[in-house]
Length: 296
Image (cartoon, helix red, strand yellow):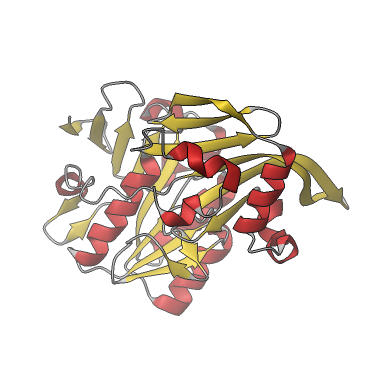
């Protein structure tokens, strides 16, 4: 486990990591007055039966991840997470504090979820031949249920398009999960020709990138509504290729969402990559007519 994660854990808990096999750990869950739990591959892998997390442990961890200044991270906290050095994302839960009907911050934090950043370089090579042709890149939508690897795949597609295909890529990383910037610098490898707007809404960042960085490809994670779709359509009309992700189980599931109906006329995407979350971990690539191009 990386030092950047160990350094934010409560001192009293760190000694338990030496007696647990933590290879491949994806999440560390700390909940006040509950056992710590480690997750591997989306499954509960290790209940730390000998360690009950105290509220003091939670406060100690918050001090470490905020570098002893929670106030400085107020904007991050109200979004529910803080990204720490190494690109690891720390999710927070507690009492929602509102001001004028909007979330101002999260107080009385009692749950912490440390999501370990994983890069899987090369994982996109099985799909790249199906979403590129000669010198052309097809607008591509990655469809996946939560936890099936869509963000990991998107990150590697961005890296390959930037490094191997030599495209100028603009990445609008709304949740700081793809590039995992720390102090503005990507902690994950997203390619030498990739520019990143970190912690920026897609609706704001896409046109800013087009005006400022003249991208050939724009990439975003987790399309969530009609405004996102309209922003991607505008980017496509400006001559950019699109790579995006969305939660779903199939093309039919995704296209059945109300905000996706606009695509019936715009035909924005001509390639669809569908990831499964079962034990087989299947990856399938379809064209705009639903024909299978790649399956493994």
